[in-house]
Every structure is written in structure tokens, then in C-alpha cells.
Length: 463
Image 1 (tube, rainbow, N blue to C red):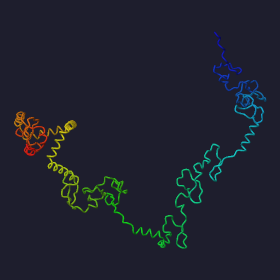
Image 2 (image 1 turned 135 degrees about the vertical axis):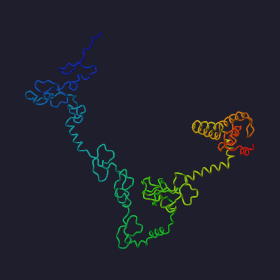
Image 3 (image 1 turned 120 degrees about the vertical axis):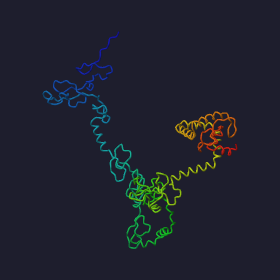
């Protein structure tokens, strides 16, 4: 077995610190910056090795003169950290002060002076600017003129000012507006040297406007003014605030002009039906200026619906306001249409139920499941209507009669298969549930009969 090699120690004199196997400089961490053949402290009796960047010649305890015992001897430091090399300019051998120094001190100083003397600074390319540019400048312009475009100048005649990079007008600041680019025009009147405005089309100043008729531009303008086509009538809406006649735009959704945009909406509204104008707080009549004289002063008619209180127009014949008249008219119109076309409507409903039986059954089941309270209320109302005027004996007779006619044919079409017990005179029109008002019917006849009387249904169906 081979013997274990002895560990390496620091190469600095007097230091026995062991070194790691990966250490390549041969010195421990405290002496890592101490050169291997460096100088020692210049104080008498001190042999502390100095760092290579030490310029005083003394260690830290003896750096100050008061810490040096005795006189400080003059000592020449001859230790070198870097090896000697030859100067490429003069060929002399010198000791470099750093690892990158290639020339000796004499040649290096002469070269610096020559470079400083021959260096020529770049000047800003903007005309009239003599600012020096840095060597890293790639724009050719100084920081003050960095946003100027050298290739573009002002488009005004005789102006050669450079434009900024973000200039989108093509003119400098002095000629930015068209008025500044217009040539100076004097007044056309003899002996008048007043300057005209850029928008002057007559060629004369205001003091000599009486001569303007001589210019063809003025005559053409005058003919266009006096012989222009009439303007179309203004059909815009007016502000609904009482007493305001200002026009509002077509896309205005508030109905108020700009002066009344922030008027509070808690103001009273004109009591005339269909008028939405807001009234001023001091209005005692309750009507706007437009409808102030259209009604009787003492007994103005009101809407007949209880709790409405709207004032009616003088020529109102229905006795109802617009809102309640529309509601009742729609109901009357729908009822009248049904009475006139009930046969066609029922036939259409019957055919619809036959064609879409599954959908109709599913929709009815869904409605019944979602509206159980309404269904129970309707059944309760139907039973209450059937029990009107009936006592216990009538109810017993009705039950017995229902059992007696259980296998009878349909009373309207004669079909042997029946499914329902119908009220010959319907409950919706005042019929009762007594035994003499009951008859056996099939499902199609019962559905088609709906709320008709049995006699009328027999006549319409031909049964």
C-alpha cells in the first residue's frame, strides 16, 4: 500500500496553513493576495510580506509614521509581480505594472499625447450647431437636435429650417398655420395700405367696403346669397320642459335640451293625456302652456277608471284616458274577433292538437307542473260555480246520474266510446252541476264545444 502524501502548506514564510488539493496558487486564503516573491514591510524589525497593490512600502500596523520605531529607512523596492517584456515601439525591456501593459512608460506617454493632439471631434450635422458628438453617437446629431430630420426642411418659400421627426405638417413652427404662409395683400382701394385678412374675399378693407361690388367674387357671393334655395323646414323635436322651444337632436333620448339636461325629474308632468312636458314648480293649473286653454276651468273631465285622475281632452268621447282606452279596446277587439271567427279558431286548435299531440301534451303538463296554484285555483272556481244553488240531495242525484250514464254514447255525435261528462249549459255562462244538466261526451266533442251551449254546438256541428 502506497503511503499517503503529506498535505501541502502555504508558501508564505512562517505560515503553515494546509492547502486544499484544488488550490493552484500555493497560498492560503489569508495570503491569497500576497505575491510569492513580494516585498516586506520597510519598518525596522518587521518582516510582514506586503500585498502587490501596496504603494506605501509598509504594512498596515506601520503605515503611519507614528507606528514606525525609529527613522524610516529609504528602501528601493525591486520585487516584480509580472515578468519583463520588450516595448514594441522602442525595443527597450521594461517591467510592466499590469498584465495588459504592452509599452514602456516613455512610449506610452508620447502615444497618449499624440492621440490627444490628433483627435478630431465630430460636430452635430444640424446647421448652426457646433456641439461635439460622442464617439458612440450614430445619429450624427446632438441630444438637443436628436429628433430633427436633416433631410426635410420647411415647405414655406425661402424658409430652410429643419423639421422635427414627429412633424406631420411639413412646415416649421413659424409657418405652421396657413395664415402665416399667405402672402400679404393690401387693400384694393387707391391710397389704402391696410393689410387684408386671409379670409377676405372682397379685396377691400372694412373702411372701403363700398367698393367691394366691383370685384366679381363679391358679385358671385351676393347672387348666391340672395338667390339660394329655401331651406327645408325644421322637423326636429323641441324640449319637453314647459316654456322651452329649443330644438333637440334626433339621437337625444332624454327629450330635454342642453339647458335642461340636469333638471330634476321629480317635477310634475302635464295632466293632459299623452303629454309628457315637465311643469315648472309654480304652475297652479297642472297643464303646460300648450294645453292650458283646451279644458273647462272648473269641472275638467277626468278618466273614468278609479284612481287614475288624468284630465281628458275636450273632444274625448270614450271617457277614458289613452292608457286605459288602449287596454279596453284591445280586449274588446280580441273578443269581437273571437266571436266572429270562433268556428275557424276552434277547428284550427283541434287540428293543431291532433298534429302536435305530443308537443301539446308536454306543454300542458309542463304548465300544470309550473303553475299548480293557478290550476288548483281554477278547479276550485269551477267546482264553486257548479255547486251554486245545489243542496245535499242535488249532489247525491248528480253522483247517481253520473254512474247511470257511464256507458252511454256521446250526446253530440253518437260515438260509443266516451271519456267525459259535460255540462250541457256551460258553467262559464251560469250553468250548474245538477243531474239534468249533465251528459256523456267524447273527448273531441267536449274540446270543440268549449264554453258553447249544447244546442248551439249541435246546430254548428250538424249533429
